[in-house]
Image (cartoon, rainbow, N blue to C red):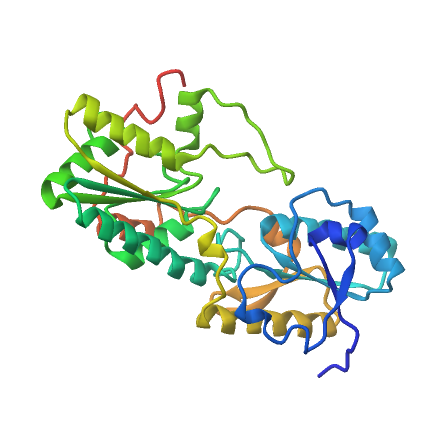
Length: 344
């Protein structure tokens, strides 16, 4: 539509600007990539050198840069935009929000989230079938969500089979009145089975205290998480077999990467088309340093700096979390001094 024939794909994330080859993107090359999962251009974590990236943009005479990714990717885009501005280059920098975690601030929803929630249903359904097939079945499903529990919350609300949802934003405790062990026992007595959905970032402080773990980080600066799923499974098993002398059948399901490795569903496909067109129209209109997305259902251009100020997280005082608590009837875990081990 704009008469642009030369479109470059940068392979391997930010490092690809100076350490990997590019690929020429033509309609034929990208013809069916929307039918595949994952990323056609591949990705990498951390390690980007903003000066080298902008040098490369300058050397290749690139005049529009479209950067697709989550909050970390957008922080990188903000740095590239600042460096481009500092050098006075005629280069438009546009962001496109894509993360299944839905943790990008300001916009209503990020691309990939709907698909992830839909796929998470399969894991929850499998857990439900398994725990209904045995006596005293306890199913634990671990879903993605390092700092934001949106996938776990929406998958729980969509499922209606989940008895308890644990997310990073809402601390929980195991023992004592109002604790998770008590709730599991109550549910097993009522229904004969129980399903827990847990986000990967839930209870990290609790586990770290119990295991005295070191604070290690990955290449992007994200804290390396302890594996909460097997830890919780073992804790529940130990409590009921050793303390309660009650036999339970534990079923643990970890579909972590499966839910982000699938092709996008219909609603995400439509949403992605809108994001792509918005980004191109914005760059062609002369805007730069922006990202695109719906704000209160209206597609808008937002300064990249605004979406990287804070991370979008579940507000446990908001109505949606209240709806979840009403749906599962789980404890709020807010009325005990035993949130963490006594060493805190």
